[in-house]
Image 1: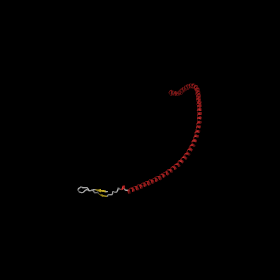
Image 2: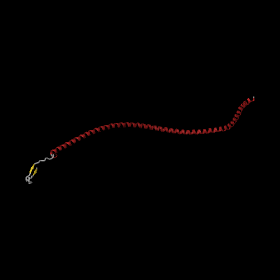
Image 3: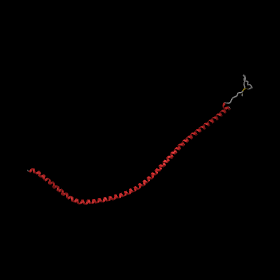
Image 4: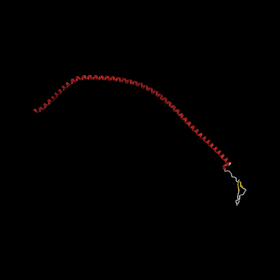
Length: 189
């Protein structure tokens, strides 16, 4: 209630109060109906958020399950490929092991042939040395024989050459005599 006391024109105060009943309603946010509506809105919002979140989780779960299923299928396919590759590699390994065995056998055979070749080479070297020795002896023999023939031949050839020179000298003279006669004869007649 609003009470008022007044004065007259002379400034004398009146002892009685006058009042006016003023009812001031509280602001709407302090009213109980606003609080109830706000509570209902809050409950609805929380409920909507929970439903939305649940829906999102379910959707995410479905997406993840789909991804997991796809990846599981991919892994199965890759496992099958790996198994096939493994089988192929095992077969290849067996082939390589067989080739390795063949190579080992060929290696042993080549080593044996190499030993034989080395043995034959050593024999050839020994034969070559023996042939070289025989060749040296033969050369020495022919050198000695040549020397034995050359020395007497040299002793014989030198006088024969002198005799041939003398014969050639006389032949020249003999050939020049008819020429000299012919040169002299036209002057004589």
